[in-house]
Image (cartoon, rainbow, N blue to C red):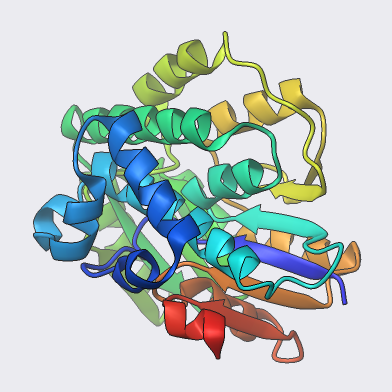
Length: 303
């Protein structure tokens, strides 16, 4: 088996996440306790109790998902659930790319959490300083979506699976694009309830500040193959990883490309570590023959 680990992006969070891990895994509980110390606020409580409005804030949910993914990995290792010499590959959607890099040893847990907390803070600030929105376009080819984006000066933010593309930009332009898409015969176009225009030019203030934050940090090469959202390909060089993380804030997430590249690199099984099962669903939508497992609760570790 060549195992690939998948780590969730923003939107997968839910109140109660991590509770079963904290209650049943010493290793997972230790990570949540360390996270509270690093952050200086009670992430563990917000994950467990909410309120949902607070957990959903970008500055909160990004650290929450980062810690949950690594806590799940720690619980799997604690129970000796990972086969010898596994995993061999890692990838994560948007924020999840940072979780994948930490799991692969590019930086330690505390450093990774500080990076994620700053990324979330900067992106939330960029959302508050702009009027952006996003929409999902289902069942259309990339070329048609690119044309729509060009005509309305918005951007293709996520290529999640065949026929599932997210667009992003100024709220008025996204609204105009949604209306035009229906006129152009695009049958399923849905505005999304999000705080801002992620992975678009409206995140430029966050990108610039994030670059400055990352500049003095030292990254190590990953211990196994990790894929980057910005190109959909494997990435190894620490300087290139840093550059990709900065660029990712304002560029398209090529998730389908990452998944296909992982298969081409030899992945035979995918394990999603995170709440919600979103990535497992996208994988099955992309190719029903792929072997995918979802680990969201401690019961999944012992199953």
